Structures are given as structure tokens and as C-alpha cells.
Image 1 (cartoon, rainbow, N blue to C red):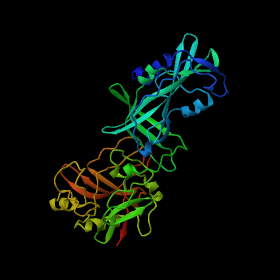
Image 2: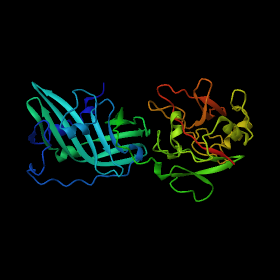
Image 3: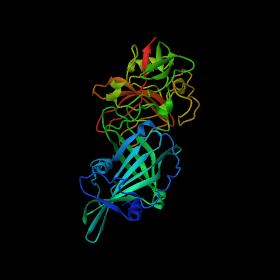
Image 4: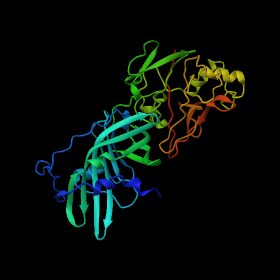
Length: 409
């Protein structure tokens, strides 16, 4: 069981907020600050750090096990929460990192009185890439206290020293951006030196801006050919009789790796049909990848794999591989073809698959005889390096893979 301080970050805030004033009856509008003026002049807001945050994190998120976002409870003057260790939290993340909000609730029982605390804290967001983290810096807040001893709630500002002590950090936040399905944000929340896993669900109707990691491909490349897919411009390369995107598709939908935007968008096979494929272009077939390999003098066996132990085969395969990012530094990854295969591996909504740095996985447009989606793979093992095709069954937690586009020249 986790330490109680995991879910009692707001305990000092609730207990040290000073004199609570203004009892609000159920169903009535929140107390109007103009009719309940503070007894002292408000303190100026601190100048806390802020940065822009990745587009996929923008929006309103609530703990996935909560019945509804706490923003709804705040608007209605109702309460949601329980005594114990489960997290009740809603976060409103803004693109510019300003005027962000966090809502949390706690329940405490003292004798025959049950008190329910619902807090709203406003602040700024600071996103860092090394390591990936999202820090909420509190500026001001309000707490509402519900009790079985009275109807409605009492409300007051959270005092400055408790705002200054407020800590909220997410490590390694990763959010999905599915166009139609429910989206989730997974991360590690700090508890002192320990981290624990958290999952948040996105509130519908709070869509982020179009996902375009770090502004990649917003303009045509300065030199060389390109293809426009949706609103983005992707560099291309002619290899043999084909023209390929030389980077992974990075449009809307799917999963992003915030710190590695060149990995592009990881998509479920079922979402490939959401890509606005330009006329003349297509999602590659197995035959397209066979031709790509053949252009480098590589032949697949009857097992649909190149010879991973053959030295010359490994050198030829290296002509398709990006010069950086691969774990094994054998010198064969020259990318002389310009294809720039990156070892992004795959992503999944639940879990973190192993293989980054050693696996380049790219969707094909095909399914196998068992109706499982098929991917093209470049696999780098400690001894062998080879290209192959392999199925990725859909199941309950389908694989999310990058994808390229190709056309005939």
C-alpha cells in the first residue's frame, strides 16, 4: 500500500485555509465574491514558471476511475470522493501553460462529523524534456468544505503558505490522440522520491490543437522532393522505381512520444484509413517493401526474412537504416538509400513494449491468412540484423505502429 501522503497532498491546504465563510445551499449558485469580499487585500499572484506543452496533453483530464470530472462537481456545487487512497483529481492543461487548473477532493471523519474537501488550484505548467515531466506550479486556490453537520458547503481561499507547498508533477506523460475513441494520459506521479502509476481520461469536447510534434513538417523542406499529407509536408526519397516518405507519418491520431517527435504517430491498424492519403500515394503493401529491399540487393527467403547472419546482407540492410538511434553500433547503418528507418518500435495503450533502439516496425496495408495486420520489420539483434514481415494481432490492447507512404515513379 502506498504512503498516505500520496493522496493527501491537499491535506494541509484543507486544514489550514483559515476561517471558512459563506455557507452555500444545495442547488444555489456559488458565492459571489462581490457580495462576500475578503477581509484583507488579496496577495499578488507569484511569477511561477510556464512553458508551452505538447498538443496531445492539452485538455481536461480526470482520474480514469472517477465517475466524472471534478470540474462538473465544482460547477454543480456537488461533491465526489471517498476516504482512503484512491486519487480523485481533474487537471485542465492549457497550451500556453498559463491559467491551468487542478481539482482534488478528500474525505475526513472526526467523531460523528464527516467533512468533504473539494479544492480548486490555479497555476502554470512547465514542460521539461529531460527527463520528460510536466510540473504544475500553484498560484492561488479555493477550497469548499461539505459536512453532514450543515447543508451546502463553506468556501474560502487557500492560504499562501499552503499554495507555496503544493506539489504536482507528472513524469513521462504520454497521451493518446484518437480521433473517435476515448483518449488516456498515462504517467508516473511523484510521491517524494517514489513514483506511482496514474491514468487519466480525457473529457470529451476538450480536444487539443492538431497534433504536430515540435512543429515538424509545417513547411516544405528547403531542398529535395516532398509530399503534402493533410497540412504537413514530408520529405521524400526516390529509391529504385518507388518514391517513399523518408520520415514517419506524424499527423493527428494515435500515440506520440513527446521527446522523440521524429518517431511520428503510432497508429492502430484500424486507424490507417483516417490518413488523408494524397492521390497516387498509398500505404505500402508487402510487395512494396520487397521491392525496397531488392533495390539494395536484398532477397527474402520463403520464411519472409532476409539472412540476418550474413555479413553482406547486414551491410546492405544498413543502407535503409538511420545513422543514429540504433543500439548496436556496428557501423552498418549508413542510410545511403535515404530511407532513414528509425528504431521506434511500437506503442500500446496499456504497457510499454520493449524494443526501442532495436526494432523498426512499419505498417503494411495487408492482413495475413488469419486476418491479422502485417508489419514490415527491421530487427537488430546482438548478433543478427534482418528484415522480415510479421503479424500483430488486434486483441484487447492492439499494437500501435508508425507508417510510411509510397508511390510508383
